[in-house]
Image (tube, rainbow, N blue to C red; front, top):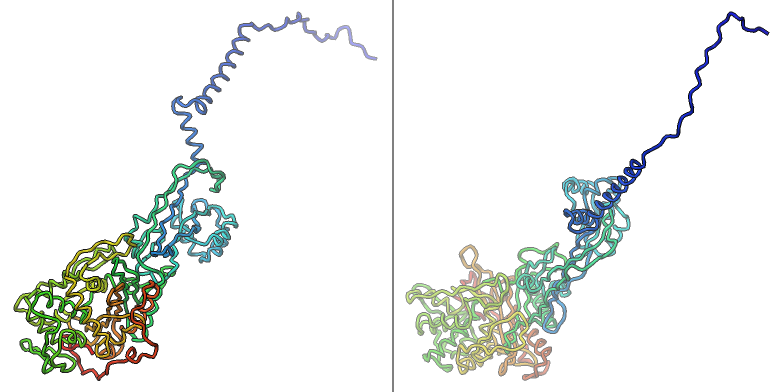
Length: 607
């Protein structure tokens, strides 16, 4: 074992250190740090409290609450229920039913492009169309996917749970009577705003006031909880129309048959309750189905009986007789000589269909003589006939409130206007609506009292205004009974169980400023004659063939007969003229002669 040499140096050893004393911290420092930490915690708690608990601490509470609620709380609209439209007996004509509308948040839906094809298929859309719509609304947060779906169809889409697709409840208008009452009732648009008819006229009355409610929604926009009702929805007010749906169906059916049988392009029918002034039925063709508007066109949307003007033709002749009787220059038994079958006014001949010779006023109406009316008109002061027309309501607004109601045109004539005065006496050189003509005959039916015409149910019948003495209207009613006799132009208008009085009308239409061979044929009458309950008018526009075969007594009178008979029975009016079904007088028809070629509008009477 080697030992170190005595001469080798030894390793130096560090000197021994004295033992360290324990570290001492001043107590004031320890407590100071502790207090500081406690203060910091208290400050933090106080700040949090100021933001979330204390309502008036620098608006922090409101700010955070608003921010939180803005991410979870929503105010949803509660759609108001539109008022119901009914007929006079309470049968619904327009009702609102709840439907589902699907909408999307494009910002959310754009994040799930892999679901677009599935969504398009469920909505029965082309995927490219959906992509185009998303691109157009990409910067927005709302777009409609499909409106007013059935709840079942909407649910089939919602169960797919596609991000950004939501449901909204709306109301859809449904019309139980469809085309039968379409022209009167009208329709609404997709936003439930009135667009036509009474839906438009009384839109403010029918429209309710939407409500609102607060709800909690999750991040996907689904309603989790309803919190409170902000505002209750106020439903619209109901509207009761004057029409009787039973009579409306009857009138529409008979008008449709008459138009089809005549091969006509259009037609109108109106039934008026003369006791109250209420319109019990009003229908027009062509019509449309407000439940399916794919075929609705301009011509089919018009309520022709109220909005369209026409020259009434021979239906004005009883008004001429009223003016003549009232003037004191004529009596019902007076004789008018129409020989030799024409009457010269200047260089223009006024003609009847044939030479009727000498006849009294009743036969002049029964045969619808243009010559007789012209001679009577010339015997009166220039505007005596015109003033009678005006008092009966022609050429002025009726005031039903129906959108587009026409006032007509009733010119003031000068003494030198001989041709115009002649035309005026048999229904030309003036314009009226079907409803105005019905109102005028209502004056005759009520014994000279003119009542306001109403499209709404009338609970208290108005007294009306007397415009003609009853003794004159009674005489004219008796004359109108001759029209529906076997010798008159309207024999086909007679009813089986009720007495009828009325007048045929045939007017030639002006085309491009000139009268053509196209006709508007009509029949208007009242029943029962001694105590009339209704006035009804049937108008057939452009019956095929024209001429005598397009005469109002042939194409319009049969429809009046059926409507008057059935309507009075439905109204429970006691029969006053019961006849046997085999009564030959009921089915008798006037002899029909061939119409002359190239008929002139103001030179022919009816046959």
